[in-house]
Length: 298
Image 1 (spheres, helix red, strand yellow):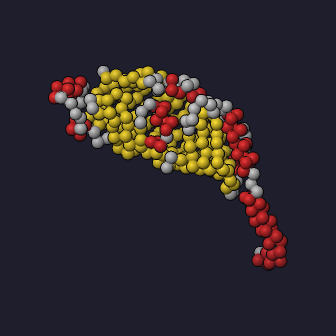
Image 2 (tube, helix red, strand yellow):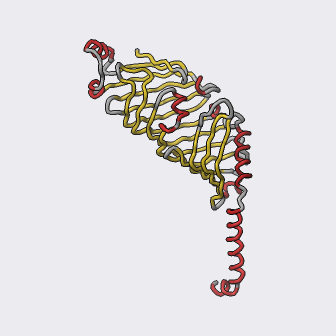
């Protein structure tokens, strides 16, 4: 083998030179603007109501694209940013294309955390049916202004977990999926103040949900904090305008000793509040819509 390489070292040298030159030319002459225009046009075809902006596109070897400073926002009538990523790396799984499975892997850095996963199209077409699996790690949701506006309350914390989804044509409410999420070390503004308390700090919130038949079933939402423990479950009936989705939720709040120590109010008010507790818990329902929720204690 060594003799073969030695006898043909000139040709090996030429081959290596051609490979290095090709890589260098591809990198320095990479059609960044052309690829960027293609990605933005593809996003427009998928959903004409959205605008994708990308600051820079560069090759990532082997067989990958790296998008720098990407933003997804409504095309008209709003300056809101739906999602903003510092970087997005996309790599096709080459062998899957040979098998006709069209699978891509991606890694995204956003909101001081990251997303990574895969997406599989049944055809080599971005409008074809697809399935995706996403791992969420350390996303700081307090930095997402759109999320705060959508739920109408300030929420902060660090989000991690796993999401699976399958659907078609990117009409997300018509697909099916599941999520198992954990929001840690955060704070949430209450829908309705409890005496003088307007927000609650928590150690973690555990969330398990299922999307099917244009509904989100909240199977488990459990809040654990130093002052209270809370639970929530029910259904969100999704509408085309997400903010108009209707709520049918119920839950409970179990206050601890620290909760009462931080409350302010007259003795009669505190006594009345404690009388409303049922077996140490406050029971409540949430109706209305995402943009206009109505909370009622029972």
